Image 1: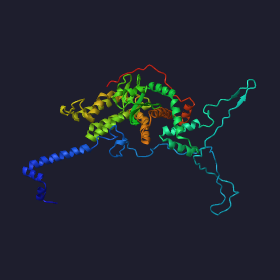
Image 2 (image 1 turned 30 degrees about the vertical axis):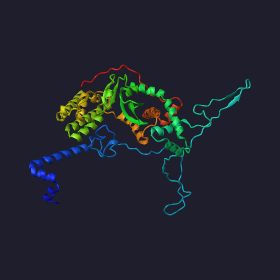
Image 3 (image 1 turned 180 degrees about the vertical axis):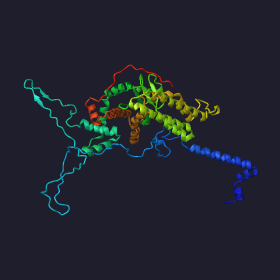
Image 4 (image 1 turned 45 degrees about the horizontal axis):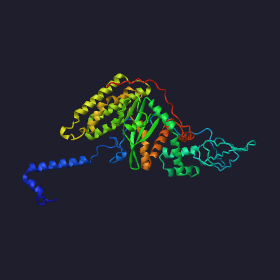
Length: 490
């Protein structure tokens, strides 16, 4: 290490500081520390997918942290869990007998010895599945009176001399739209399973045909959603041909309706046809255009609140955020305890949760600094920052946040919509988007149908075969009843 004299000789700026005295050295040291802290803060991300609304793909680094609440139970099956196994069938399709011919000990011939016992081992195997070819013979007859030749009409689905059946078309569409497998790979899978190679153009034609025959389903599912007591709403962006589009979803546990639209806001949500005039409760992620629908009540997703509260805890170290998380989770426990058994939550328990909620808000405002006038921008509304903005939303939308306590039909989170719209992101990862707007519209319509039929336990191939036969499966629309809306006091 160099001595002090050589350092001062090589660094005239430091030598000048030493001449100025100890006070100058200390001021320079403090300035360097401030520059270092500012550089660190600039490199520190403000949050990730666990604490903000950002997608996981935007995370600056992987953080394998579980979001599950601690239950105190060991991992794996819990005591009393029934479990499951591959159960044998009473009547197997094929039986193979393995005879004993020689004694394993003395090698005595046992060919003519009576069988004392038999143990069955069953193997469940995927068979070769050649396509079943059905020939429809259309008779033609010559009329002896007028010499007119009359031929029998072909049945629906057998109009051409040779063509593929509706269930095979349903399977191809299920692979492509239901599981986002590209056209070529879908054709490869069908060839491996059946021994027949279908063309990619045939799959696209079937998809276009199915989409065009789903108008009765779209109308029925829209009417069923409008009659539901609570619906989930969400939206996500995607691109095709360099243009920005949005996919909107309205759904319940048994229904799904997706729409591709150029707009994200009120115009896009209205085009879905559910929210305008809806009188139930709309659950969403606090996005302001949803609140523009005044005909219904609103509930907001507390899963989003939990992620943002985690961000406050990690970013600012505020204890009120962790206490607010506990309040929301305690409310969820009450909902499971009472609403899952068709009971209302006692008023005293709701009041206790509400009081704790307000205490957390007051604690948050006490320790969260409000931006001064000098920090305000020259134009627009002054920025409040992430923590204060979250506090403002929790304060201004307290009724919507805690609505799940008062109404057993209102869920705690908007996870159903998140699950139903998630396939859009998977499709983007696989193919990067859509080539045409018509392709995106077909995807939304068929995906709505497949998701709804899956929720109702209907085989997807059979469901699509019904569409191709001109008789799509339709959800039951509840009979409309007069609604008695009431506002919940904050």
